[in-house]
Image (cartoon, rainbow, N blue to C red; front, side, top):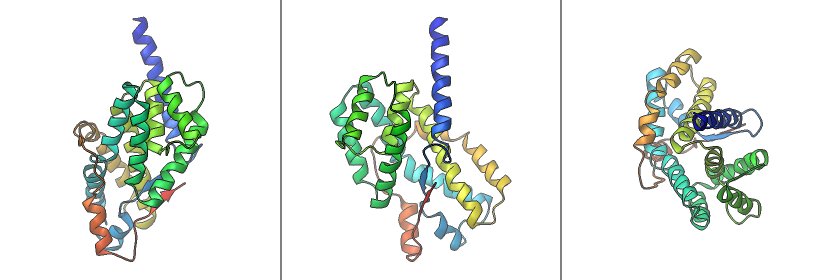
Length: 233
């Protein structure tokens, strides 16, 4: 019974801290790549509740399932193995797979997160990784910083990915309010609907990391003068 209570308290602490950390307003800010939302709106490919839902599902299936979900699961494995050298290698490798702007934003936000969470770290592997980030011996991508902190707090990778992905989808859909006529109530319904499918998407993510996103590539070629942007707060 005592072990169950302790675990419950730890999970509550982890969830509480991640609700604050993943808030794009305070204290760390946030960024998210639109993966072509603006061009899709301009081309009238995203113009209602159904088309926006399809767009977001494609992001999860073509992007997150093959890259972010897979990377985070690999990070947790390396943390469990106390393999700092390979963790640093994967951190640098992940950064090299991103566009320059995306990689810079990921590093900047990762460093900003680290300022708020790098205290009372008890797990040696997490402490050593953070030390390497501060000494510029590794890149310090946002996902690696947050994944390590989730591991420190006792969150499993699936729960962390659920929180991270939902936060990212919220940021993307909030931008759609400014550039489309889709109603806020409809966007809320879309986001609630993802609660039922994200768990399965995370579970069935690719074992191999890939940065080829057909949705992203398609929009670049179809609308060359309107590049997909990153939303930053």
